[in-house]
Length: 266
Length: 293
Image (cartoon, each protein chain N blue to C red):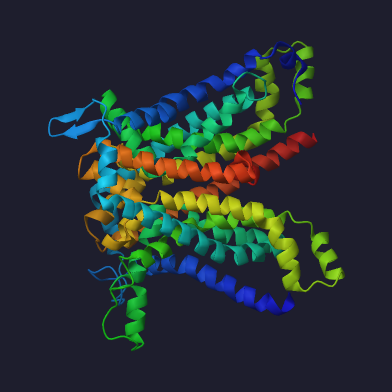
């Protein structure tokens, strides 16, 4: 394997070049002082970043994305947590729960989008951020929230809970004092994962968002309407925000699991 | 470990906790899907939708060859994309699985980072790469290899492959990496001790043990590619259109909801058929849950 070592390493180098070259190019072009998006590089300018925030379209889309992201992450995590807790018991039809959760993942995004468009359209529900987008995002994020939480609760040692019950604790007290502190890191990780999934969602939102654009929908409509010179700057701004959220997520979930480890040691 | 209380009575009130999530899915996922399938039997006219049940939409799917052609093209693009993603991802997964400690963490973070943003952005980045004023064309012109920009780089099937592999390759790399990581090192050492060459060890030990990850990745990439809309719309041009695009155009341009619903039912049937075949072989849950959980 030593002989193939350098071959594999150069391949991996090529792969990361393939992965990062387009992003680097976008970054460079966002400073290009040219009315045409592309090369040659005609000098450095910051004016495209100024135009990104002009008119307030992007800012409004970002606010919409944050709002619907927070709401759908909270709702989906709450529903997923309840379901994962409930699945620890036996009941008829239990085998159908996981397939039901997987349905929104298996359904192609485009089908989910137009399906909800028709459903809302024919039931008379108006399209918009708090109707179409919220419904689409919770439905899309819910399976992932469940798949992140379920394994943690499945492995959970029930004897602690049973001991508390035997000592006279009500189910609600057992949940608040025992289950919740133990699964807190998993819960935070799930919330953040759900938020990023919602923040990046596009195809399920496009058809039902009405006039309340989310960030990816805003970018899409800018690209489709015309390839404008400020587009690379818009792309860089959106990517930076996504990267910041991801970094925050890593930091918070790392801190939460260290905290939980400390609690468990004590 | 089942609690003694629940196993005695058959079901416990705690099971009621699954009801809210199931209700949500019933109202917003399963219900709309069934309703949508019904709409595919309706008819559209200038006066709006008529809910008389007919096979008109399905009849036009058969009568007009364009739909069968695009379906075939979609399946072909999805299959080739899956194969390309496998070729691209496998050596990478192998490389990362061999790294240790901080180096491995760094490689995984570097791999994840570009995927943390919307695929609209990740597809869009190829326009300034492959366009007339894009990096590739301008670099080739600067080097004197070509005189005028090549138009063949963008708006065709090949550009769709580049875009789809770029957008979906993580879904292939991750499960393969996870199954390679689980392989017991002593099995590989045993193969070497018994005189196997590196290639034999790979073929007889490593590759077979990584197959669950390979199949999981192939299923994910194939399913995602079958439903692609953004990539063919932005990079495909007229010759690189896929099924997702003709579905969308029934709602955005043609305003023929029943036909769009019928097209969606066809795509859904293809996807469910693939999931059924894959899960019969590998187990439904392992395909989606097992390798990741």
